[in-house]
Image (cartoon, rainbow, N blue to C red; front, top):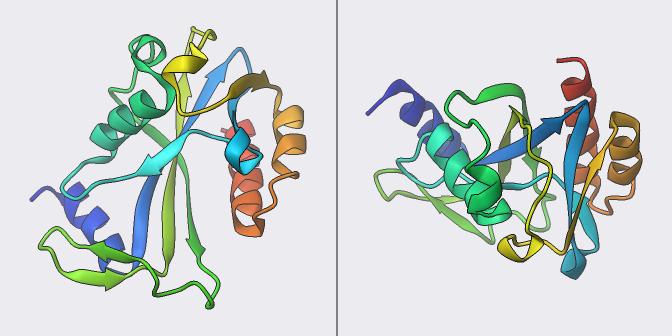
Length: 170
């Protein structure tokens, strides 16, 4: 098992589900996506599966979230993790979901560990019907911060605002 896979599995053993978050940048603007069902603007993101590297998860999740046409024009070969954050679930919701380690050991999920990855792109058009979302926008850092302040989930709002600030300074 590679060192990276051991690190990711250790995150699971601590009760945190590892996640990749794609922060696509075009001409100093950030890609934000909207999900009507949740009334939420956010970065595309998803879980890292067992025995999957960050690069493999990034390619799989971003393809699922944004469609092949967009992702095939992005270079995901050398992911640049610019920020890592951990989110603990409120005590009222801890222990309701389970994780499995790479050796199939069951663990109660305490929260999520996010790997924020900067992805420069030269393509801005997304075929929304190929995505899991209802709309998208390319936003300045100030516009993205403003949208992030509207996120009703306190933890996700704080994570997103920190990531935007870190991305702006990277």
